[in-house]
Length: 472
Image 1 (cartoon, rainbow, N blue to C red):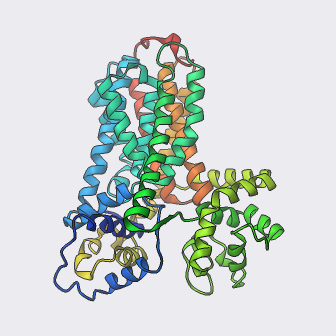
Image 2: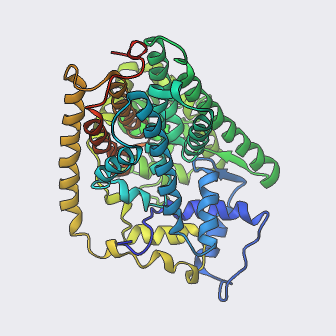
Image 3: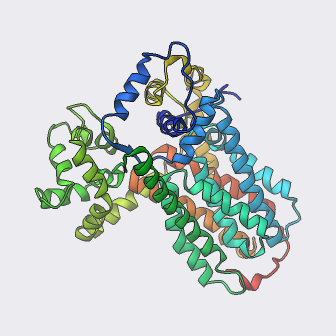
């Protein structure tokens, strides 16, 4: 409401183009007056037709959502979807937590007060952000609630939680990574608990992983059979390993090697002496002769490097285990300290790239121009300081209540612990595999004041229904 329009990232344009291409197969868009010969359309078409591949690193489900609202000239309505999904997730979680802990607070209080606490930090920015990041937090809330109170959930609540979590997990590759790494913790919680229903949460998490993998396979099959294109995933893991050092050192040792496709990228990195080319962003996206590498390679080599990234990670891990694990941990630690909302505010470069990547003519891009928060960002430094202070105080409150004997009941401890684990896992997945960025940290950091407010509300709750079955 303050911004008078949605917040967005340069990749928002890519989501639109991917979704619009899919929608056009069944519902062709009508061309507005003056669309013929539009600069953005021409450039987008050239990009689409340069090879027989399509990117698999973006969610088709979210792309369709963005494209549908953008076509209807209602891009801001994406924020309504975000808000509705968040409210549903928190309502489901608090509804079952209330039954588990038997707190005197009403469900309405448990929903609104913690959300208002989160609303003082990054939460409203991510609700208004036309990117799928808010769903990472939704996933963590649902997983924590199911671990703690899954045994008390009704069939309808289970269906609601599974449907919403399944939708969230397919909206970004990092969400799948987060759920995969949460599975061991969920299984460990089941092993340490007694009583009926302790494996329900493990089944829930494993089911989410299976559904996300099935969605990827279905997308690949549909793309190959209908669009006649091969799905290629951006080699973020390879770029991250090279930038951190273990991958580059490994390539220096083994290249040239005919059976290692990534050696072609190693060779491309030597085409310029500019040290700034060795950043993950430049390796993946840059196309200039001075800083580019991956995008300057023949398309066949790009496909081979992308297809090899998982195998490359395993080879580097086997050859340099301590160096690789240290780099992952260092990136995760760096990520935990990055929580500014700055990346949700489009600057001139983001506006320009979003317009270009959307492939739309200029007449349809007015929604991206009227961005109040972009005009004057003098408020951002103060907001970052305030947000960081709230996060720090909230973390102290949460840890203090976890360690204070008898302060809160075991189910509340378990819920808070899983939120903290989720925040750490998010940092490991995003910072360790992609690259540390404020966008990835701030998308879940609002869960700290949310959790602190929830614990403070529920600390005077009565004895849980079955304390013997919970971790103490």
